[in-house]
Length: 399
Image 1: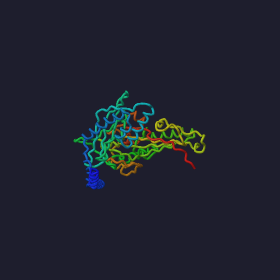
Image 2: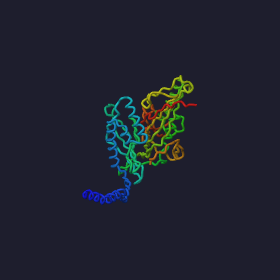
Image 3: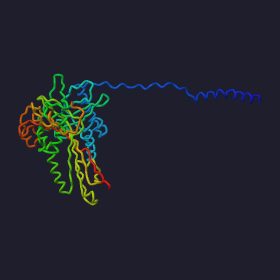
Image 4: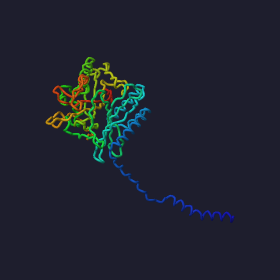
């Protein structure tokens, strides 16, 4: 009995201590929280030919990794703007056709690096390089690749790639003793067409043909007025099938780039959209009426079914053009006294042959030369690239 009593007494003595311990645990000590350090923004890196060289090398390596793996998402991390649209479309077409995505071999690039304001953005440069498709025997093609960096915390990306014409007399870009090119300002009036107006002038030629006022300053050819001529023929064929075709070329808001050439002119790199709609008016009222067929160059972007009565497509097109120096007192369309038809406001901008010689007979046939009937030198397209990048078949609207 005495032992039991002593045990109860010991337990009674321990209870307050245990309770006190529980009370202390239920109210943990509040400690001051250390403030999260705010990372300082990255320091701007000055754009130099050496930086451009390393940027190009890095892009080529990562592009090949993405293409070899068929990794569209990875490929898109190294592109931007119109080039992202074209890259996505290329991967989807390869998957649709059951083919591997093209891979490229590159030669040694010639880098056109403008001397930009230190610490300012965007930064950009252009690489002129021979590129060949792995496994193909067509030979290398000269490509103008435009790269852009929009901020110190961003990654360099390929924003535009133009394949230069095989027979093009590409104007020589002026390079100073330090290895830098001269960037043309967007409203530079020393060239026939201000760089900011080049896309609008080209779109006007594509929409209106040789009769356009834009033909005063841009040479007619397969990639200018030729778009209009082909569109008119396509509209006639569509009408024979009771279809209506509309084609609308427009400038874009993508970046454009202007570089001074040795003759005082400019090499301008820019983009256009070409939007089309093929419509069956009968199908809107008659479910049994035939619907427009999906164009062959857009099949990989659609599931093969036309739900409504029309098929819409959009093409992303890249161009390079030689912009000749403007003669004294000359006020061409888009020049100092002209107004272009451009809708684009690209961020940067910051070939009759350059010596004015006559174009070849082959160029006369294609129409992409550098002088018009009056003998005046005009802007001319020297390269292009592009594809259908979007397509849709909107369902019929319900009344």
